[in-house]
Length: 89
Picture 1 (cartoon, rainbow, N blue to C red):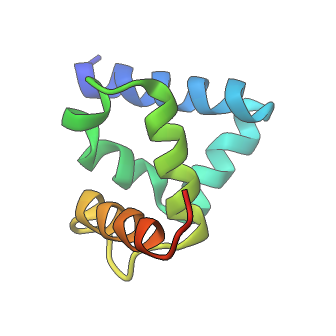
Picture 2 (cartoon, rainbow, N blue to C red):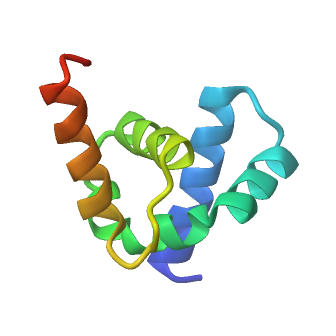
């Protein structure tokens, strides 16, 4: 299995544990929101960050999905900046 494949499993398991969901619930969530693609495209950043950061990014993506998933990191960074300028943490 590739490093990226192993990391996808880690992301799924970490998210599952943080949210108290079953594996089947997380797989369904990832399928429904296109999160597999987001995780694959974010691999190089997420694998060096704290796992709690990608949990926050996944939650933000679910709340405010990008029109396309071609540049997920830029989309999330823009939304993060918008929240800070609006006075939200």
